[in-house]
Image 1 (tube, rainbow, N blue to C red):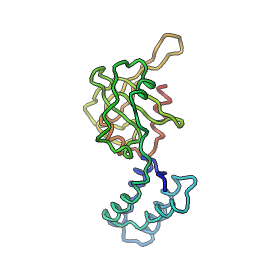
Image 2 (cartoon, helix red, strand yellow):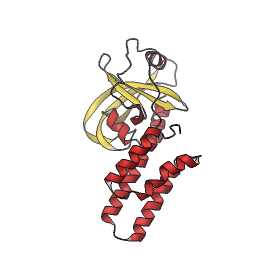
Image 3 (spheres, rainbow, N blue to C red):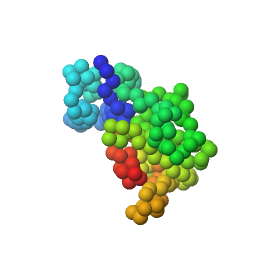
Length: 211
């Protein structure tokens, strides 16, 4: 069976297992537990529009999870079927960021590509943050300066309360040759942000605002 689960879908499934764990730990009413199980399974299966019988069998046990040990086993079973992020090469970098002449591709050796929905890194040379993310079936690039907010806030990508920075980027203005600066608070730690992403909707919104 080929990988069919995207990284953010895996994170969403993981969040549903945590809801079930919390429910079993705190709820005594059997009807409440039954509802939690039904809703969790429906939410997980509804992530996918056309599941094969084999894929469905892989995901079906989600509603049997009661504790962290069971969740860990289940998540380990489905992780091999998570689609890894597309390989990013120097050629990809040059295509997405043609004006960033000396920009190097980030080191990916220590990154499990199944655990990222987008690639974000800070370039020391330029002092900018670069983001590569999927958009309409292909990769697109964003770049801008980022200044730590020195406090926690809601990230524009993952919608979680994390240590954020102001990501300031330029977009073309309505008059030729002019640019407009736009700022958004995003996670300073892109790996942490990736762990929080359960939908790409906010990333899509960010890309469309800045492109």
